[in-house]
Length: 169
Image 1 (cartoon, helix red, strand yellow):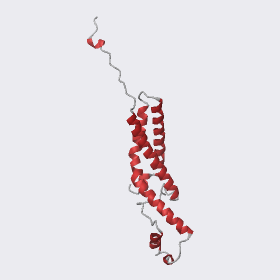
Image 2 (cartoon, one colour; image 1 turned 30 degrees about the vertical axis):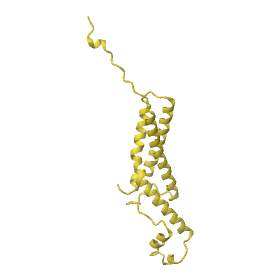
Image 3 (cartoon, helix red, strand yellow; image 1 turned 60 degrees about the horizontal axis):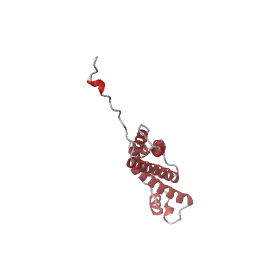
Image 4 (spheres, rainbow, N blue to C red; image 1 turned 135 degrees about the horizontal axis):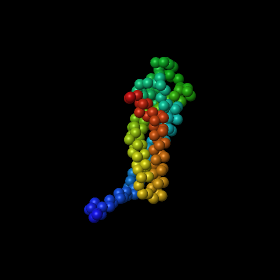
């Protein structure tokens, strides 16, 4: 029996190309942005008195707080009329600093913290796809570091509840 024309054609194996330098740089930059945002959120959260994750009874939108001595005096003078002329106590100074850090934390979470919900899955998907391609030791190292950074950011992002902390949902 003669072979058919289909028997003579072997399918060519699909060759995946290794990741390019541009892909490595884009992923590394995105991972660095996510990691720096995550570290900054953690640092501001510590300065804000570990405000995140918000308590279950703390519902509603995240409000701006007075972050200067003048605005603190203005807001609190209805509760303490002596604030108009007396110096602030150390506890009140600490509260003003904490309110300022809380406001910066809120601004960071509302901007770059929410961007992480798009960046982190992208970096995770890219680093996973590198392991499905032919790779060199440098691509393995970059992909592993990007993947570890993205996993750490995802853990922090969901533990601190960036989206739910804003009171929008």
